[in-house]
Length: 360
Image (tube, rainbow, N blue to C red):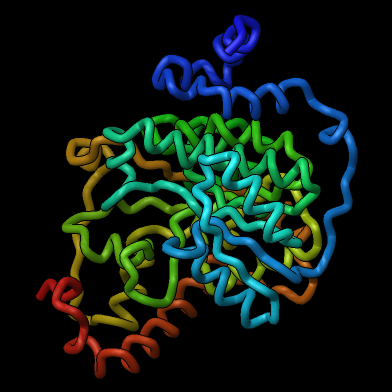
């Protein structure tokens, strides 16, 4: 790397964190991407029209990823040709070759590291987290931009926390223009620093997903996670019900929308409200206990983001044929679908539930 490149990386506020925490982050692959973003090329200044049918989709994170797998199924049902990416997104040359061979009309980036069993894993695996969540995502954004391909990035809204200007219970949510203010986990730090760079790519639609909820018991489902906890905090949050929001993301991609979107159902819902709906529809015998954020912090390696995201821009730009319910309605409908799905899979509830979901 040249002295001028290193100087830029070290003086850029958005990148100083990575310089301090991961030397390999200065690898020439990422440096090239950053130079492109920093210089603001003519491609960035142009207003590229990206609206087009999804005829051939290339999905990163589609083979083993939760959201990517769901997106693949939906696109196939809509008649699109779907290719599940083979290349690892951090390997720039492999991704470039794959894009040129597949020639997709649209790319969907659903690959990422959130850690197992949760984001605490990222605290002890920082290089791995950066490699996929930062280098890989920027590689894909840059390479698709070079080829004028629309790229949907399933990102995160866990980059904010309630503050004086967006107080808990105020109904004032963070907008797409607000600067991330939550850096109490390494996972969120990487996402918070990356988003301003992704914004520079005119072909990318960046979707801030939060606490995704599905109508099954898969381990990635927010409801599944908190049902297994001994104690939960009780804080209203913006959340994403995938049954409604993933089809919306495909419609937004067809429309050619780009830029950042708070990708959550309107409004907020608390942990207790989610669990009460679980009790109502899935297991009436289920019980839970609350604890405070201070008590929670004693058992976690990293902090957790709690926030409300403003849905005004999302609802304004949403294609007319897409219906998005408020989060309370969406979660209740989700629990009704879950009840039906689990009964068909396991038998009468709650006695037929897998053992790990039975506390009593």
